[in-house]
Length: 390
Image (cartoon, rainbow, N blue to C red; front, side):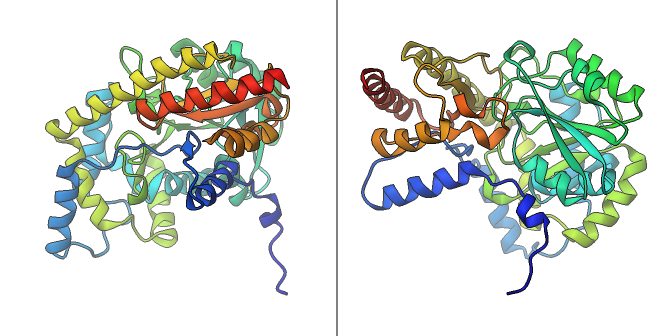
């Protein structure tokens, strides 16, 4: 058998996908499984976006675009950042990518040399480590606490930055916790990284799904941060595979050169359709849906606490709850397996996001309707009651 590259053994598995596979098998067997596992909105692209896609297809606009994307879409994204996140951006700094994954790949390839160490908070989205390793880098997970909102801190940078450390990857709001980094804490973190001449990759995929007063991009604090974003979450276009990055102007030629070879371009029909996402009428639809997610959060978190699951930090963005199951188990793999098979509710074990809290934490996604969330809570309560009696 052909010998595989060593990196295939180092790639972090995605346990959320494994749980999804198990849930799909049970559904196929006739079981009614409520999925609080996969982070995929139950909403899909608004009708106006789909209509634009159909018109573009009928007009034959399915050929290659420039590697950096359609000018109209780059302009729309730049305007969106200025209008909604108070961070005006030159469209020339925007590169449209094949999902946020494509953006992370380009950022990692452009910034990380073999052997470079990159700091991330534990817990964190598992695929981020794989992009770092794919570029030859070494991801280093730094255990975080509820007191620091499960986010990387300036103190972490001071304590853990070593001779091989090159930069940090942070996310606000974060997957799996749904927490953001406060403005002062973020400014202090940025300052510590800059003192060490490091790079910052900021995942803002869930920035549109923020439930505070006014979302602010990290670009407001430092214009040289590399921003990652996507049409998957806030814009509900997961399978369209469309995202973007915003980088300093000096980086764009190198990133475009990489993009031309690694992807040629992002899906062209999806790009044409995505321009419609930013029309005022369509943005109003997204805002209504954002409020629906907030309503679900406001229902689910108190209910989880009522049935005995601790939520150490109130999520203020995304559509995830990071819950502590210590009262019932210190084996989240076993807990998630039994909750799925005995309770009919799919969640994700903590080990997907790093070892620090893996044994006693699970992630729940509230990217499903309130009626199903209510039924999920009912099933979990019955399951936990059995656990307490066991």
